[in-house]
Image (tube, rainbow, N blue to C red):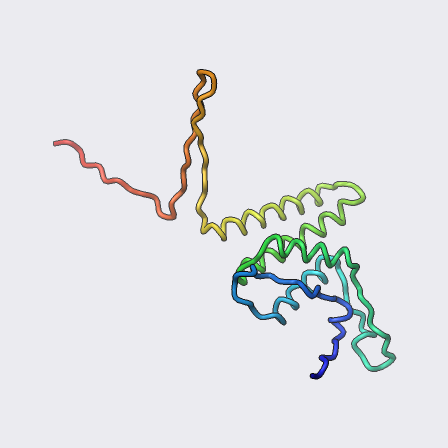
Length: 172
């Protein structure tokens, strides 16, 4: 059995062994693609560049990890919590993680208007992901409760993809 040689990316931007974008019950997808997506997210969220000296044979320096274990765990936990099921969900999850992490890092010294806008953008990306997953359906819950003589309204209303139309004919 031959051992696969580690690339510079494998060393500089390590991917956890247990990293998975899919739910355990779903079919396994392309592992190299998932690793590439994870590395891109790490690299962009933490603004990491692989130094040129690691990638050339001229005056080579031994590569070392460019991100911490905490950073890797943060990205991994967010990806696994969002559980993207297709390419669009993965792209939205990646956008959310990048914007959210950068907003947190920049807000560390104090909140500015730009930081607030980044947090708002990350919230909008999550809303977009939710709308994509639910196919735009909106769920409104209204409940009727009867407590000590008081009546509260409760209804469950689901928005349909296509609104129901009724045809009304005037009386002759």
